[in-house]
Amino acid sequence: MRVSDIVRAIEEFAPASIQESWDNTGLQLGSPGQEVSGVLLALDCTAELVEEAVRRGCNMIVTHHPLIFHPLSRIDPDNPVGAAVIAAIRSGVAVYSAHTSADKVPDGVSGAMAARLGLQNVRILCEEVPGVGLGAVGELPEELSVSEAVALVKRVFGLSCLRTSAPIEGKIRTVAVCGGSGSSLIGDALASGAQLYLCGDISYHHFFVPEGFMLADVGHFESEVQIVEILHSVIRKNFPNFVSLVSESIGEANPVNYL
Image 1 (spheres, rainbow, N blue to C red):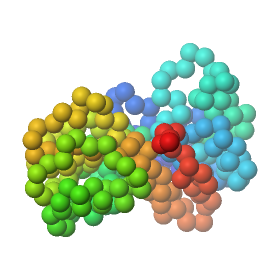
Image 2: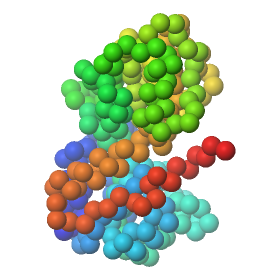
Image 3: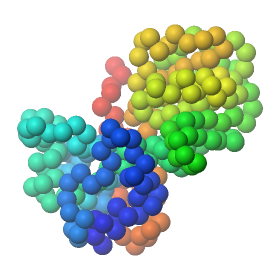
Image 4: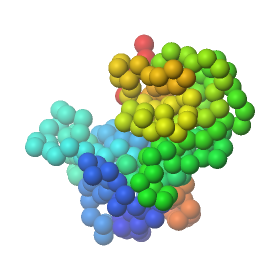
């Protein structure tokens, strides 16, 4: 098994060619021809994750977020990115990231959010070409009150609290979602007829929304973490007898803490 074989399987599911222009989806470290002993999957690549990969017999890491997102002018071991790069190179660990490519396929990040909520008639929220685009929108099986909808969202995303705009009057049936930083799609969510839009990284001013529309911040990590298991299933489906593992610390990997 080579790095190129793993990459090929992932990109059949989420082609790197559809990534956003500012993104760095693809092979971050390593050679396509490198032999692979096993793959470890996580949301982010850290020095600790590299150590776990080596300990568990894996010399390839697959993440959602790119390890190298911005150009590196210096590789500093005291910087988290630099430490991860140094650890991976020293250990001979290849790193691949499927970022906005996995955001823009129907069964990717936003599709997983819609499935967790039980949405029906799901379609792409901001479709670029048929079958490709950001976000998703669909209908709940039945109308819910705001309190019922909030309880559902908190339960399926494992939240103890939820940041929202002012609660709307009436029932919620149509829900739009976008994993990660989704404030750029607020207008698309409004145009879709959704009463509720879920995403992450919402800033203060975005919470001023029109009457009849409600915005909720479910968290960046919380909205995206399920993509790890989706990518894992892609690898297992293509290579059922090959070692592919999800990080042991995936449930504790959120860099945002609530104290």
